[in-house]
Image (cartoon, rainbow over all chains, first blue to last red; front, side, top):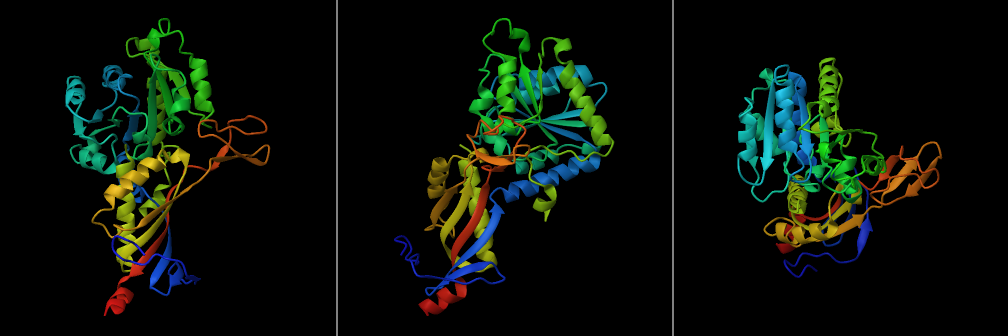
Length: 266
Length: 123
């Protein structure tokens, strides 16, 4: 007996199977129902909806994740400098507070929608959906979603992106992928950012860091990049070029950890 | 602490199933959570205690089945139970493996008291 409301939850089940999924019924009228539904079903459904928008307009959607301060906004600023004349770019910014990052992006002549999440430590598909209403996807080639700086929570929420890109700055430990396996397992590309500082932070081993990514059964590309040195941005820009070409060729692109859209859209 | 958001999604699904049946009270919520889902079960239990207030699952028991991380190595033809940050074959050491379980975040089963029977019991 539940002490709060008096409903019965005691022993004495009789197992009965029927077509409605009811697997047992007690004399009290309590029934047990198999559900087998992903808990994030509604988020996944909204993510599939967002992805359908991106797909139908041929817009590449990239979700950038990292711990705070690893250089996501700076990477975007330099990316816009490098390819902003070739691709029409927009940015969705996620932060707990302030519009600072969106202001930095807009200063580069690119539309930026700021989502301030308050106490919420991640973006979800519904927030991104609301932000998409402020953008005309028909006029865009790439939407970057800069997630809240956090190596834990954003990894659990599909936003409708085509790929997850995780930054790991060389000023952080090279064992971060082992400490935050969910995030790095979900990464379709890992960027070792601020790699111009490797001579200073010589205890960061890119080889060791890549080994920790591989130990998550992840074959994602891993590049050492620096927003301060254009030649060190080349692998990242080439990766973007390849994905845009692939998307325009009709390739169905999904993040490696996304549950199938067909299933969630049903 | 995204477990509160997860909990709200869980309770939304629970509410949807309860309405569909229809049921007025949910007495038990059984979920499966694996380490690779990114959800901390202790945090989830605390969040559930707060989030269930005022919902159909207000007095429900939350049962969490923790699923182990198990990988499959195709060349070796074996499964290995592994740590969440070491998804490599127990025999050959290869990381080119498939995760068989451990990333679950699943609402498995509910116990419900359905509306008509409760009315007849009280009437």
